[in-house]
Structure formats: C-alpha cells, structure tokens
Length: 193
Ligand SMILES: Cc1cc2nc3c(=O)[nH]c(=O)nc-3n(C[C@H](O)[C@H](O)[C@H](O)COP(=O)(O)O)c2cc1C
Image (tube, rainbow, N blue to C red; front, top):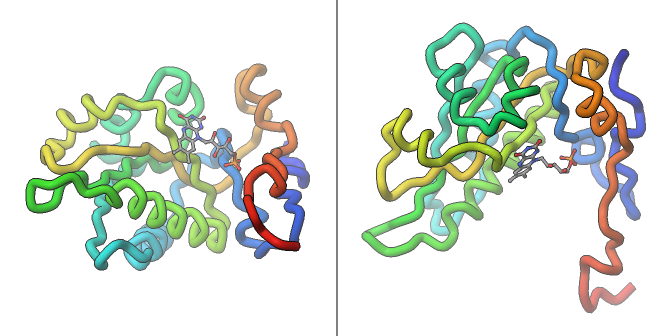
C-alpha cells in the first residue's frame, strides 16, 4: 500500500505545497536517492541563514553500503533503529556550541534552520526526511571524533517513500494516522485578524 492522502497537512490557512506535503515517514524505499540529489539537499542546508553567517552546522551522512551508515544506525535509540534500519540514508546534524570559548546561543537554532532547508529541498525532490532526537550524542561524539566545541543535536533518516505495510503493526497504525497541529489561536499571541 502507499501512504494515504491525508498525511498531507490540513492547515488553517493555505501554505505552500512543498510545506503541506512534508511529513516524517518511517517506511522508506530501499534505493538511496542519487548522489546529485543528496548534494542538492546539502547545498540547500548550506544556504540557510545563520547568525553573522557563521554557518554553525556540520553534517555526517551515511548511505547504505558505506562504512558511515551502520555507525549512525548504532547511535540511534532502539525504538528508532526499529524502522530507521530500513532507511537508505542516515545522518547526524551537528551544531557549533562554542565560539571563541563562549557559548554560541544560536548554534542549535541555526542548525534547525539548515535542517528545515534540507527537508523542504528534499520534498521538491520527492525525498522525505525524518529527524530524531532519540540517539546517543555521546556515542556520536566518540564514533565521529566530534570536537568539544560541537555537539550532535539531531539524527535523521531520509529516502523516497516506502510501503507502510512493511512496518511492524504498532508503528503502521501510528504511521497511517492523520497528522495534527495545535490551533493557531493557541500558538500565536496578539495577532490581529
Ligand atoms: C528535533 C526533532 C526530534 C525528533 N525526534 C524523533 C525521534 O526520536 N523519533 C521519531 O520517531 N520521530 C522524531 N521526530 C519526528 C517528530 O515526531 C515529527 O516531526 C512530529 O511528530 C510531527 O510530525 P510530521 O513531521 O510528520 O509533521 C523528531 C522531530 C524533530 C524535529
């Protein structure tokens, strides 16, 4: 089976189709996106805005069959490994946390923006990104020799959509639920209509 149409966002005001189509799947097609597609996703990430154009982001990217992919998989929590072991690309988003020995408050914020750029460029390429906080930053630091001034903030799986029927029962049920958001009235304060 394919993903149902109601995985699409149902926003209170019309939003761009690329944003409406984005969601975080757990079922991926086994074939990795072509190297030039991955390069475009990373170029989109690189062109995100950042405080002082500091670009405080770094990425680790592994593709099935290379030595990096299983190293990223090992860093994931078992709950995420259960589905991410079938994703053709696994990676880490790393933020700079110190600059000139002082805390860099905007490091993780800017990394988040670059991940958003990557995720939306991905949709334009029919590729989907699923970000994860469920991983071990300590193991990531050890495995990839991450500098003390940097920290792995997020892991991600990406690829083209797979068949949600291939997921274990509990995950498939969650996977097929329509997506929801808190109403704008509870999210935005002092917006005049
Ligand atoms: C920083 C971050 C951490 C996340 N961590 C996990 C995770 O560890 N495991 C997981 O299955 N999904 C994770 N997600 C995915 C969210 O659950 C998902 O984005 C959210 O439920 C909204 O669904 P949508 O992306 O399909 O709109 C994470 C997303 C973000 C942005």
